[in-house]
Image 1 (cartoon, rainbow, N blue to C red):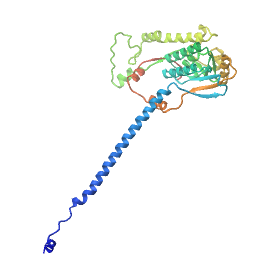
Image 2 (image 1 turned 135 degrees about the vertical axis):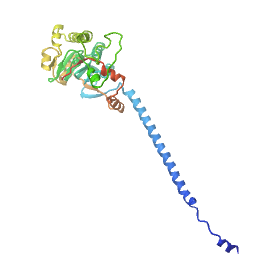
Image 3 (image 1 turned 60 degrees about the vertical axis):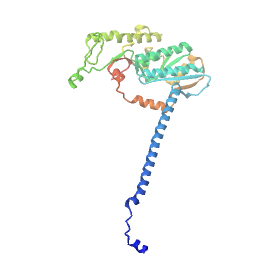
Image 4 (image 1 turned 90 degrees about the vertical axis):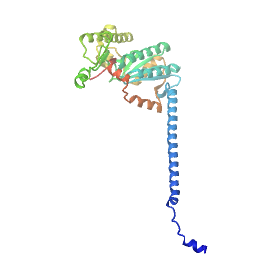
Length: 341
């Protein structure tokens, strides 16, 4: 019978390939799905990062010239005294910051006077001189008084900028003075040639083109050249600035004081380099008297915290070994700076 015949036919075993093909396809499908998801996450994070970066750039541009007004002393808003800060080493960034604060004060018609709060040992000649010039220009254009208030250290370039103000008030423990110029640089000749075996080659159009050079020790002729061309002109400008700003002192008296010496507040007052010893309250009373007002709202310009400012500060803190950095490292800079050992 056909039935019996079919029973006698051996049955082929189930194919292993057929049994396992379905799970493999499932696993392959999951791999594809996970790959797609991971790709979407990466793309999404990249897009989010670009969006945040765009927001930072946008608000960085918008907030560049904006400051918050922190209230230091309450009073009528119709009369405002604004405090502007110079802190740390004076450089081009410090100067730009001061320019923006002066600009903000100039726009605010309720500001009756300024206090320049100085806590600085000085800095570059150019930045110190630019700040001095902008303060004098503000006084001339607005006919509003400015009082310098010295805190801690207000020496060299710190004194230079303070001299632009109508009056100078210093805390009892202030260190000021240091009227003079300093320039320093490293001579790498022995390090390069004897220790590292490096021999610098300089090709120049004239023998003075690279004076002073970090690749060789300066000669007496070179030192005199630097003094005549750089040190003395900058020194004379400092002396003249102080003479013009301090009516009580003539140029000979200023020269006697301008040997680089530092002065405590009491000695500075005795030598007529400052007008009064006191704290911020005394500086506020002085500016109110000069402005002809009895009461005022005292505010201090401060930069608001923002992600843009935070990232910019972090970026500036990173050492960049580029051409500009190497140039600054290798090139001597004239400074109105008190450089204590």
